[in-house]
Image (cartoon, rainbow, N blue to C red; front, side, top):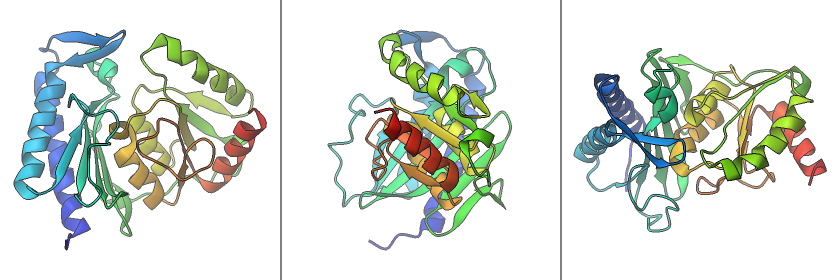
Amino acid sequence: MNISLAHCQQVAETAARLGAAVLESWRGRFTAREKGRADLVSEADHASQQMISSYLNQHFPDFAFLGEEDPDARTGKNFRKDVPLWIVDPLDGTSNYVHDVPAYCVSIGLMLEGELVVGVVYDPRLNEMYSAARGRGATLNGNPIRVSATKSIGQAMLSTGFPPDVDKQDRNVHWWRIFSMKAQSLRRTGSTALNMAYVAAGRFDAYWALDNYAWDVAGGIVLVREAGGMVTCLDGSPCDVFRPDLLAANAEVHADMLQIIQSQR
């Protein structure tokens, strides 16, 4: 299959803007319900995903689609590697969105033959479009971006995320405590995709988490890699978008964090 990544990237950017426009049209007038404790979902999520899916399908009808709001979306096991796959989070940072905190986004990734090759993260409140494709570099609103030049964890600003399930949060509290004694500062924004985009742009020096889903990180993985960063699992093994643990950083901070993680196990 002859696929132009530049074309895919352009279509993904437009789809992200369309999905975000739906979110903004719903903001302040939707009703929210809980699909799990403190795990909010709204009509806006579904409307955004429907818009994105429809637009992507118009341009690439033979591609598969995996969205957060799909009922069978957790593992990706039902998707064939020989079929291109869009991996979409129509609203990353749902709790922020519900409370009108301006830290949420749309995230879109494209996987070809098991490899992530296009990544887009769009923040509608700041009108920031992070975009990347394999071999084409990463940009923010069309301008090239790179991961930070921070040389060690002691100089670094780290970011992380915590799962909605309180019972699962203790695991990351452990690492929050350890890294808080090593890093210059830590942040929790409530949006995994924005955390990854900020690593790509050099705003954050690293991002780690233990409970991601594919749609949380698919777009961001491409961004960080194309911005010159490293993305692996927490044990240093190659990144797997369907594994929950992930570490993304520039090379120096990544090495420092891996050493700390391995020394604590």
